[in-house]
Amino acid sequence: MRRLKELIIEKTILLNGFACIFFVVLIFFFLAKDGLALFRTISIRDFLFGQLWNPIAEPPQFGILPLFLGSFLVTLGATAISVPLGMACAIFIGEIAPRWMRELLKAGVELLAAIPSIVIGFVGMTMLGPMVKNIFHLPTGLTALTGSFALAFMAIPTIVSIMEDAISSVPRSYKEGSLALGATHWQTIYRVIIPAASSGIVAAIMLGIGRVIGETMAVMMLTGNASVMPRTILEPVRTMTATIAAEMGETVHGSEHYFALFALGLVLFAITFIINLIADAALHRKRK
Amino acid sequence: MVEVPLGKDKIVVRDLSIYYGNVAALKNVSFSVKDREILGVIGPANSGKTSFLRAMNRLNDLDLSSRVTGSILLNGKDVNREMDAEEVRKKVTMVFALPLPLPMSIFDNIAYGPRRHGTRDKKRLEEIVEKSLKAAFLWEEVKDRLSSSAMKLSGGQQQRLCIARTLAVDPEVILYDEPCSGLDPISTAKVEEAMFELKARYTQILVTNNVKQAARVGDRIAFFLMGELVEIDEADKIFTAPRDKRTGDYITGRFG
Ligand SMILES: Nc1ncnc2c1ncn2[C@@H]1O[C@H](COP(=O)(O)OP(=O)(O)OP(=O)(O)O)[C@@H](O)[C@H]1O
Ligand SMILES: [Mg+2]
Image 1 (cartoon, chains in turn green, red):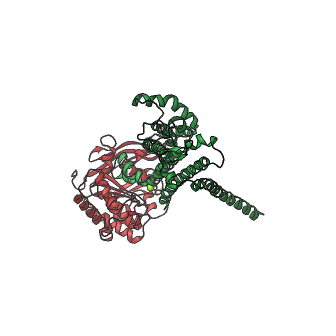
Image 2 (spheres, chains in turn blue, green):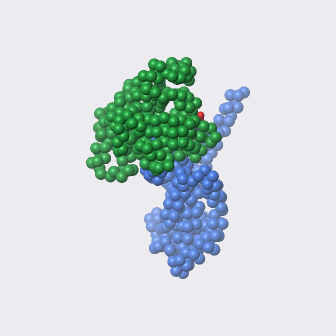
Image 3 (tube, rainbow over the protein chains, first blue to last red):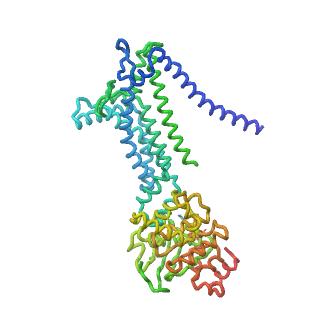
C-alpha cells in the first residue's frame, strides 16, 4: 500500500515535470509553424536586415531591423541602469546593512517586483516622460531612454534577489580568511566575495535582461512607438514586443502580416532562449 | 616590527570577558603571552578557546551579538581602543581549523595579503611568495604549479598554504585554532615543524584539542575550562605537576 502510494506520487511529479517541457515544445512548434510560413513569400534576409517595417505599405515591408534595434537600445539602457544599481543594492543588503535594515530592504525589493507593469508605465508616462523631455530639450519625452528607466525598475528586483542570494551563499570562511589577513571590508567584498559569487551575478544579470526584453506593456506606453531606424537613445523607438501587441489585433488570420508577427515572436523566443541558456550555464559552472 | 626583548610580554590580557548576548563565553581572564613563545591553549569543548582567539584579532567584531570587556594589549597598545581592526588583524593573523584557501591560485592566495597592504611590485611579490612558502615547508611541493588553483591541494597542503598566507603579511603574532584537527599524522608533523621554525620570529598561540600536541610544541600551556582560565604555566610543570586538580584530570583524560 505504502509502495503504491509512493509510486503514484512519484509518477505524478514526473508527469508534471514532463508537462512543462511538453508545453514549451508545443509553444515553440506553434510559433515556428506560423512564423516560418512568412518565408514562403519573403526572404529571411529581407526580414532580418530590412530597414523598414510597414505592413500597410504597398507592397508591405517586413524588415525587423528597426524593431530589433529598438528592443536592443531599450534593453541596453535598462541594463546599464539596473545592473550597477541592482548590484550595489545586493551588496548592501548582503554584506553591509544591519540585520533589521536587511529585512526591510528585501521586503521593499519584493514589493517593487509586485508592481504591475501597467502602473510603472503609467507613472513613467506622467512623470518620467516630461522629465526626460525637459532635461534633454526633446520634442517628445517618449523615447528609448524613458522606456529604459521604467524597465530598469522592473529588472532590479530580479537582479537584486538573485545576486543577493549568490553573495550571501559565499562561504563565511572566505570572508573571514580575507579579513584575518588584515584586508578591509571593502577589499574583501571586491576581491573575494564578488569573484566567488560571479557566476550567480552573471546569472542575475542575464535573467534581468531576459525580463526586460520580454516586457511589453510599459515599453508600449513609454517609448513612442515609432518604427524608424533609431540613431540615439533619445529618440522614440518601437520594440519587437510592442509591435506584436499593437498589431496583432488588426491582422487577418493567415495573412502575410499575421505570419510576420509570428516570425517576430520566433526571433524574440530565440533571444530569450539564448539568454536563459547563458544564465543556466553560469549557474552550473558555480555548482561544479 | 616592534622589538620586545626576548621573554618579555608581547600580549597582555586584562580582565577579558566575552559575551554572546547575555551568555559569557570567557569570564574575567588575565594573563600574558611572552614574545616569541608558543602558548598552547587547551580545554574541553565550549571552554571559550575559539572566542578568545577571535577577540585577539577582532574577528569577534563581525558577530553583532558579541561583546568584549576588559582589554587586550599588543606591544602595550589596546587592540580595541587604540588600533584599527585592520591594523590588528595584519599584526595578529589567524589560521583556522578548516584549511580554507581563497578561491584563487596558489600564488594569488599568498600574495593576497601583501597586495591588500599595498605591495604591487611583481618581483617583490614573487620574493614574498617564495619566502612564505619555504617557511611553511610547502615550497618544494608546489613551486612548479604556483598558478594552479589552491583548492586542488590536499588538506595538509592547504593548511600549510594558509600558514604561508598569514606569514606573507609579515605579522607579529600568529593564532592557530585547532590547525591540525582535520589532518593526518604526517601533515600534522609538518605543520608542527613549521611552527618550530617560526619561533625565531613570531609569537604563536596554538589552540588545540590534542593535549599531546600542546605538549610537543608549547612552551607554556594555558588550560581553559567553562570560560575560565584555570591555570597557565610552563609546559613541563603543567604536564608533570599541575597546581589545579582539574588540569591534571583533563590532561590524563579523566574528563572532557
Ligand atoms: N557566534 C557565537 N554566537 C553565540 N554563541 C557563541 C558564538 N561562538 C561561541 N559561542 C558560545 O560560546 C561558548 C564558547 O565557544 P568557543 O567556540 O569559544 O569554545 P571552544 O573552546 O573553541 O570550543 P571547541 O573546542 O568546541 O572549539 C560556547 O558555549 C558557544 O556556544
Ligand atoms: Mg573552537
